[in-house]
Image (cartoon, rainbow, N blue to C red):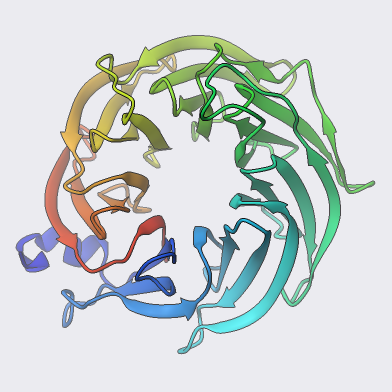
Length: 357
C-alpha cells in the first residue's frame, strides 16, 4: 500500500528523518533511517550506521547528534553519531560496565548522560564533553534483589531511566525488584544519591518497565510489563509520588501478553501504551485531574510492538513492530486522540527504538 494515500503524512512528516534502532542478531546491521520526502516516500529503509544491537536511541536537543546504546551480554557501549552530516559520522564511542545496556537519558544541558543495564541492574552516570568527543564515567551503582516471578525476577533488572520534570532527580524503573528507584543528582560531587522516601514499591510480580511524566510536570505514569498495568501518580518534587490510579490495560492476560512502551501527546491530553503478544495499542484520555479514561484498544498492524513515538506536532504515531520487521504509521486526531491506521514501512529488520528529526 502506498503511503501517498495519507496526504496528512506528506505534511506532518515532510522533510523528517526517522532513525530506527534494531536488534542485530538476525538480518539487521545497526541503525537504519527513512527519509520522508514527497518524491520518494515509499523508499526502503537504509542502513545509516553499522552498530551492534542499538536497542535504544536518543537525539541531541539541536537534532544534530544521535545517541545509541548497544545492548550486549558483555560490556555495552554508548555511541554518539553526527547525523547532520550527509554520511552519518562517528563522533565518540564509550565502552561501559553493565550487562545488557537498554536505556539512556540525557540532561537538558547535554553535560550528563545516564544509562541502565537490564541484566545486572547497573546505573551509570557519564559526563559529555562540549564537542561530544569524550564520554567520561563519573558514577555507578547497582540494584540488588528479586521478586516472585521466577523466570523474570530472579534478580534486579533496571529497565529504564528518566529525568524528573525539573531535571534534579533521576527515576529508574526496575522490573526485577518491582521498584521505581529515585536518585537525586548531585552536580557538584557528580554522583547520584538514592532517595528511599521517594522511591515506589509495586505489587509483587508487577514488573515496572517504562514511565512518562505529563507535560505539565504534575503527573507520572508507569507501565508494568508483567501485569500489563498502568500506575498513575501525582508528582511533586518536594514530596515525591502520590498514588492516583491502577489501570488494567487488558484483564484477559496470557503468558505471552506483556506491556512495552508508554507515551503522552505533546498537548498532554492523550496517553498510549503498547502490548506485545496481543499486538495492541491502548489509548487513554487524560483528564484534568490526571485520571486516565480508557478509549480503545487497536491493532498495531505488526507483531511485538516494542516502541513507538508521537511526532512533535502530535498528529502522527509511528510504532516499531520487532517480530514483523515493520513500522506501522497512524494518523492521530488531535481533537479526539483516536488513531487511524495509514500504512506500514516494510523491510525494517527487528525495529525496537524510534526517533524522529
